[in-house]
Each structure stands twice: as C-alpha cells, then as structure tokens.
Image: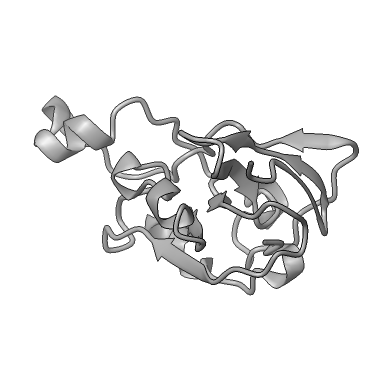
Length: 162
C-alpha cells in the first residue's frame, strides 16, 4: 500500500489512496506562500509552516484566467468545468507509489500549457496515477497566469519528499 502520510519541511501532509492502493495522491499542496496581499507583486515566498496534520485531499484553485463565453469548445466544456479561480494558485498535486519515507523514485514534472493565459494543474487529462504505478513520482503544479505570471518559477527546495 502506498504511503499517505509524510513529513515535509513545512509540516505533516495526509494524502489519499488514488484509484488503487498502490498509488497515493497529495492534492493542493502549497509550494509557496499565498501570493496575495503584500506578496501579490513579489516573487514567490516560502510556504508558511503549519501546525498539526494538513490534509491534501482537494485540488487547489486555478489561477484567474480568461473565461470563454458560451462554454467554449468540447475540450473546455469537458476538462475546465467546475473550477474555482483564485490568486492563491501556487499548489502542486503529487502521485507516488512510495511505501516508506525516503524511498527514492524518479520524478516526472508536468507544467500545463496555455501560453501563460489559461490552464491549470487540476485537469484530469493529465492524471498521474498511471505514471506513479510504474514507480515514478508524478508532479504537476499550478502557476500564476496573465498579468500575475511574470513571477512563476522558484526552486521547489527540500519539500520534494518522495
């Protein structure tokens, strides 16, 4: 069975089993401080440590982006429905088949497309369970878009725990 409770630099995370018990998924894991208020026009800041156990069961928000009037094409209707949009979008989703802390696995990183205008890390077309079943940690993360998108990338640091 995959590991669903891990200790990272900022605290303890509790994920959930994915479609089968060989893979765990950690959803909506913050990789930087919320980029709002005083952090709005700055480079990403370190995650604020949290007390106790933080559940990682729910996708993070998608960054604000242009919405298509009339529902858009098939792809937009199918994969971009039911999104919550927010400036607080610097989160990652991680799938792993690791069974114990410290287990070494290669990491595949997925950054969504969209020309820095649209997209998110929630899209189920980029589900990571199949990759994780093969012993590869699958990481996809959200980025700031549009006017907020100039300060996107930073070093993930030591929170890549798997």
